[in-house]
Image 1: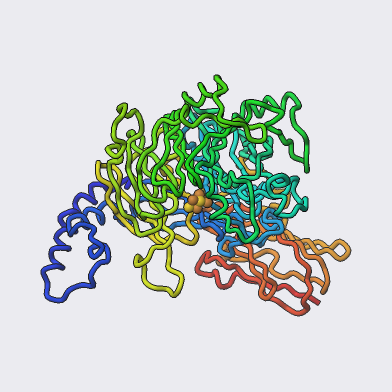
Image 2 (image 1 turned 90 degrees about the vertical axis):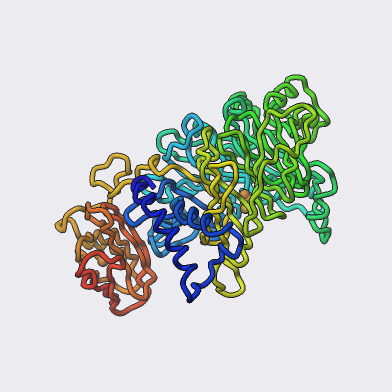
Length: 634
Ligand code: K7E
Ligand code: CUA
């Protein structure tokens, strides 16, 4: 919607006319599900159609980055059209872009061919998304990844020790100093230790970590780890404004036990309250600088019992999931899944409680702040509150898993003694069993307040049947007015978790890898002329420097002996946007895709004798079919 608003306005009478026209003619069109679901009649439908219609040639207003859970990927869509426009492979191979087939990405994936990507985090400057990097956690294998938003490619996957299931991640500080990682499922500490589950309470531990982000390159490296009691550290957020300097993570199973056959859902819900873990990362930095840590499995570990001031617990309704810091940074919102309320905490009250040592108790050296002293209010939002987002206009939006709805409620201030129900100002049903939700620039210090996307888990009836597994849906909701309006139902690849929405004009993706662009590290195996193309043999290793350009490879014949180690570097010397070339060898499971100006390398053993064709997999010109050659294995 960056251009063509006028076109759209011109369409209003047309669309309305069309709807009326169809309703009036004899043969009824197939009834629209939106209408059947009671979206509110033709005019609402026409308005919704108009609000999401991005005319041919027009561009969307926002990027939506949504995680694909155990597909290990991130998907990119445009808002308001909700069109899926790209897939960014992160933790899983993706033949479409050759990801996980060349040496570099294969090495990045390491021993795993999948991950469980949950929470994308955008880099920030002064609390605003700056469009440089996107981070994403791997809930399965204790990893975090960085994607460069100049070329939308995964550049780094960092694996750190002692983290079991990294769920409370990737939450970025307002100036991108740190991104978080945390243990979801406690295990014996240190990593790799054996201890029976009967020793859960004493031998098992959680770990929270601060991952440093290099301000120039975005490179990630472990800053510090904090040793924690054996709870499940679930979701997190980074403070901002008055809460800058703190990380917050919810945790459940404060009962600190795992009873074999006892059903964790039961045993972990015994106490009325679980906690939000609050970490003061400036204090963590001081502890590291003062040498108050131990290096275990290569990680600097801070024990909060020996470093007072680093960690605190804040009591919260039991079995909590989301914790979210509002745009001002003053209000910390946490939701217990089994409570019909969400709780607002005040960072000022938290700081006062810390200063006054206003504690209820201490757990493994970590003080528990007095609930009544730090809580601002409990808001009766509804059943199964999970995640909260913001519009920047003083309202919060909480997803209600059990109710399958989004509740809109007012942030403080509240009148003393007021009935809190009045502050829940609206609710919209979604279809249904919503997990996360996201508003436009909702994690920044200035959300845009116009769109909200509900990410639904069990969306019955929103798509054509494709068998036993029902496709998930993402519902686009207009939150620009007082009342929330459903605009659009889009498919999401499984399994949707969190998403982020960033203004399109904050990103400036490259068009090609320019030959001399200093931003990208120089590839020593790049070649730019046919003269440099060559095949070299050293003993039993054959190395090939190949050039790809419309529409041939040089060299186009590679001769090796069976058993040779083969290294092929392919440079696509095109400097024209979208002129990609692929390099595939039949029956050898070789598949690279090389963007204009890019060089990729694949190393393999020629273990099958015979003659194998290689060819370009990406349509590149009228003579793309002719872009082929032969790999001869004697
Ligand atoms: Cu609620 Cu992993 Cu954020 Cu899924 S988590 S919904
Ligand atoms: Cu190169 Cu097709």
